[in-house]
Amino acid sequence: MAWIESHEEPALGWNVRRLARKAGISHAEAVGRIHMLWHYSAKVHPLDRLDVLVATDWHGDEQVFVDALIICEYLIDCGGSYEVSGWWEMGGKRRHIDKERDRMTPALRAEVIHRDGSFCNECDAFVSDPHVDHVVALANGGKTEMDNLQILCREHNLRKGAR
Image (tube, rainbow, N blue to C red; front, side):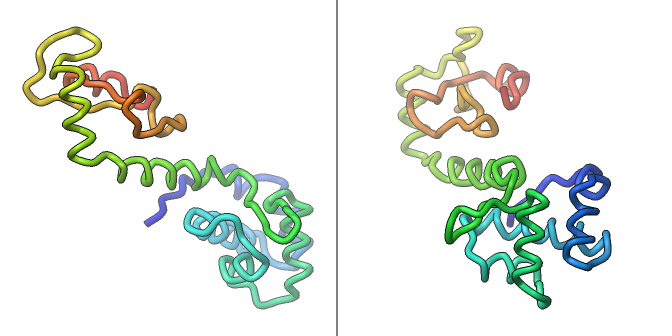
């Protein structure tokens, strides 16, 4: 299931009010349809016109609605397909993290432990329960590859977080 962080900004921003006016819908409906689009785009990317309409459950004039999304900078026309503005921040990052977490196999974990010898890369202490950590955090675009993995003790892994 996709998780999309939501803030007051989309609901209070001038773009959402502009979208509501251009599409002939209420402000609340515009906020809801934008969120629906972001959630859908976390699974399907890039989008075609039908994806946009299905994602937003739009039943009105499709040209008016798609044009309004483009004019209000919620949608980027890529000549036959569409990208959702802010896609990486809204859902792409979450999708990347999920995909990369799935790549952490028991064999890869064992290979990192064998390479680092069960010693924390921060304090050099022997670790009986080693944490395999991403040097560049997944949230920052890091990958689950040998050269981006290290062993940390529990204390250093929890202290590091997504840095």
